[in-house]
Image 1: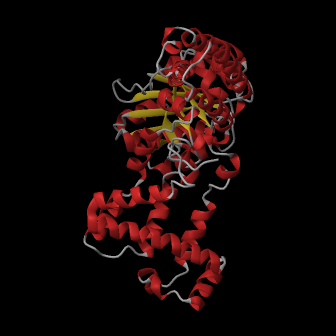
Image 2 (image 1 turned 60 degrees about the vertical axis):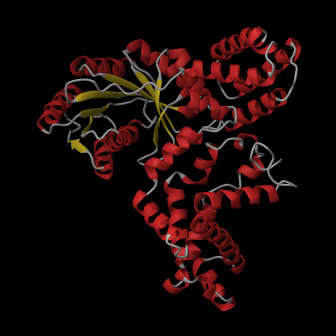
Image 3 (image 1 turned 180 degrees about the vertical axis):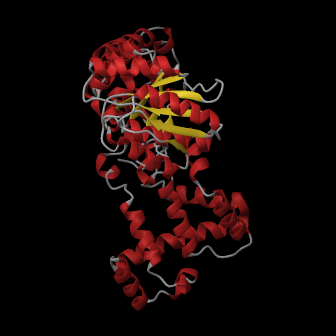
Length: 462
C-alpha cells in the first residue's frame, strides 16, 4: 500500500529536507506537487483540500520558515497532518462488556467480511488471549456459513452453526446464548452483504443491531475501491452507529487513498487493516506509523512487533545457544532463517517497513519478492543431511545434482553457498566477540562500501 504516493511524496519532501532556507514560493510549489500526488492516490477531494490547507497554514508560519532546519520542520508538519487526517492514534477495540462482548461486522458483498471475521478471531485469540466464538447470519450467499465454519476450524475458535432457512435475528440470539454457555469472551457476528447499498440490507442489519446491542460495530471495506470506500463507509455510518472501520486488501492497493479518506469522511476510526490473505494477515491500524511509511521513514515499531509475534522463539533461542557455544552455523540453520522470513510476511512486507525503501526506484523494488527465498529453500532441501551439516562437501558434481533436484542452475547453488558463507562468518564473529564483535564487523563492512555503497540514509544509492 502507498507505493506510488510514497514515492511521489518522498521525492518532493527530500528536495526540501536539505535546504537551509525555504520561501513561501517554493513551499507553495512543493505543496502543489503533494496535492497532485494525493489526488492521483485517489484520496477524496475534501480530504486533500483540508490537508493541504492545514499544512500550508503551519508551513508559512513561524514553525517552518523561522526554523533553523526548515526542510526538516516541513517534513514534520506534513507527517503530523497526515497522521491527524487518519486519526492521530490507534483506536483500540473496546471489549469492556459483560461476556460475551459482541462485535457486529457490516459491509458490502466481496469486501472480505467473512475472512476478516476469521482473521479478527485469530488476532483476539493470539494477541488478547480471548476465547472467541464466530457465527454467520448471512442466509443469502450460498456456502457463506460453511466458509466461516472452515475458517473457524483453521484458526481454532468456536463456531456456532446456522442454516439458510433461519432468520438472521434468530441466529444471532441463539449464538449469544451459545457463547454464554461456552464462556466465550467475544462473539463475532458476520452479516449478509449486497453488491450495492439497498434498503432491505440496511433494515436487516439495523434489526440485528437492535437485537444484539453490540459493543463494537465494524464496517469492513475494500481498500482497492479508493474514494468509493469512503463514500460507502459514510452511507453505513449514517445508518448504523459504527464504532470503527476495517480496511481489507491493502496489500493489493498501491494508492492508499481509502486509508487517508475514510476517517475524515466518516468520522469513524480505522481500527484494523488486512495486509495479506493469510489467517494472521490483520494488523492494528496506527496512523502515525502509516504516515511515516508514506513519507519513506519506515515503520520500525511494526517491524519489531511483526518479529515478536511471528518468530519461533524456541528455534531462535536454540540457534543463539548453538552459536554462542561455538558450534558451526549450517545449512539447516540457514533454511530455518529463510522460513522465518516467509512467516513474517515475506521480503516485500519487511522491506515496506524499512526506512528509505520508498525512495528506491521501482526497478529495484520489483526484484524484491519471495520467489528467490523459495528457490533458496528448495536448493537446501535438495541437499543430503550430511551436505546440509557440512556444506564444504559440495563439489562440482554434487552441486550439479543439487541444482537438478531443485530445478535450478549450478550458478544458483554457488550464489546460495556464497550467501551462506557470509552468514556463517557473521555468526562465528558473534560467537568469538559477542554482540560487540558482530557490530565491529558490520561497521567495517559499511566503511568498505562507502566508496560506492551506502549513503547516510542507509539505503543503496539510485
